[in-house]
Amino acid sequence: MERCPWPKNDGLYIKYHDQEWGEYTGDDKKHFEFLVLESAQAGLSWITILRRRENYREAYSNFDANLVSEYKDDKIQQLINNVGIIRNRRKIEASINNAALFLNLQQEFGSFNNYLLSFTFGKRITNYIEKIENLPPNSMISDRISKDMKRRGFKFLGSTIMYAHLQAVGIINDHLISCFKFNKIKKEGEEILGGIYTDNLVLYNAGIYENNTQN
Picture 1 (cartoon, one colour):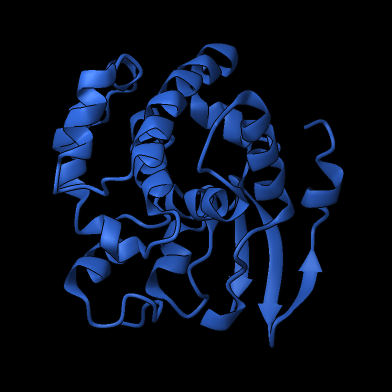
Picture 2: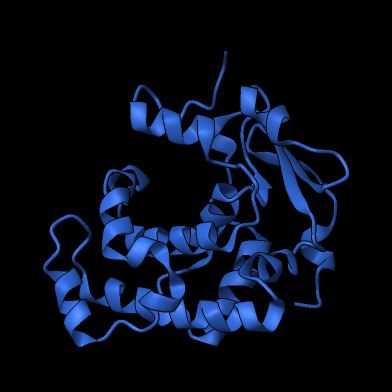
């Protein structure tokens, strides 16, 4: 069984790759969980955050956006003193700020998942990538999403982080074509072709980036 090479021999990373990364559920609670973890990741490796994931789950009210949005100074100080998470005041304050804005987007679009899909014509994107070095760090879609979120007041969620988010929650399938997960996740009729990546060149692009101008 062949998988993407980035988990290497790390058991936690392999489990995350095999059971979670790229799986589409459309679940807003999962979206919020990843937004909290990804904003904490800024400047750090993802495995550093994954190893603290359960600590974050306990510290952040099981990733309940309604509860997190109500955190006050005493809770912020409690989080800063929590050795099980990344104790960065700006990131912690950003996560609380983002929780309130996340709830706003749910109200406006019906769900945060709907908000993200509004940038992709309601479809999931499949990229056909041959080599790990061809994995793009961002895209025109993640640029648009992060720009819009920044306009709305979100913090610590730039284009690279939002691209990683789209990969993680399965809106973008960036498993290598040789990986056993690629075809397992790929579902015709629910996706649009993003591009074929080989030798660091994008050989094909279906126009989704250029044509999605309504956002």
